[in-house]
Image (tube, rainbow, N blue to C red; front, side, top):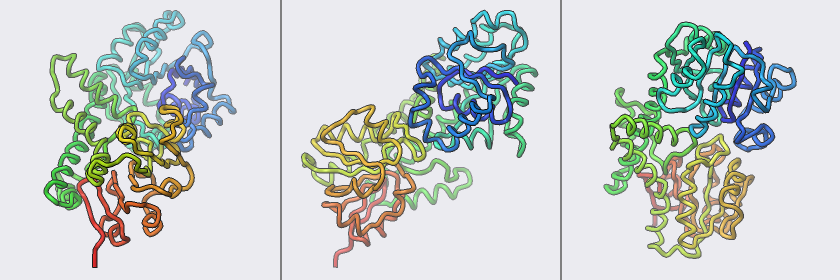
Length: 430
């Protein structure tokens, strides 16, 4: 099929690479905010496994063509839009272009996170002679290629048979193992995407509240988590307490869902509370540090492992580390930070600072001369450290585990003090 793909989001790049890979003729028009000359150099795109390889393959084989303006486009059979919420006006401008005015039977695939009902509005701009579907973005950063080419599910919002049929054919190569489409009306698909992330965020925030209570009562929250997860009505997914969630999609989906509620005249106290809890949890490691040093933190040095909002990505959008850094710096704390991918993004945001040293290769470099280690992002390289080596490097012998990935008793047996989210252990004294 002839596909015109518009956008510079991760979902746009992934769709461009994957659709061209299976033989579609894709013309990709990146958004003016991030043309290809800029997009091709960003760390979050280059660090996505397999993605740049397939983009370069499509460009070399000619199934993928980059264009700089809509006037360069051929008449497509499908217009695939993958834009950010702030780029809605660009979507309208593209669909109102005279190039499409006299055409028939073009299918709009809206892969953007826009307000509920936006696919219908965009369809109206195109004209009734065309079709449209809502295909909400469900990619997972860090494994975008796999989640697009081997999906477990796809929400497909369609109100006419043509849109559904064309979309199924467009994505047929990625629907061979089992039926992954969940078909429903367009508005329902748009709301379902937001509702899913709202539910996941609610589970995380609730578990973080329980972890805080466990801390107060002297209970190991891991016992509580295991007991809750074993209940078949609850399960274990997204039931891990931590120091807050971030990311460009998750965070803005929550805000978008709250906006939808407000615009519909329904204020959501629950969503506001979920977001408030998450912002508070981003400070939890700082509060534990403050408590340990009784507020005397000036001149201390903290080692931080992990800056990215999740393992496998170079992005720091809404990442917990940003809140943590601001709090530490405000108290005169020096930071030595290691992350295998997100250091360039961090420097792009905060610049070069005397109270920040960064490392990308050896995690132990960040710990040399530090008082405390904070684990913020659970990259696999951090899961099994040399505890005795850490004990010799950390002056205060304190580990603050923001993701509860370590065994408290084992850490304590190596002579270090452990403080997690709802978990703690101290070295045994003879």
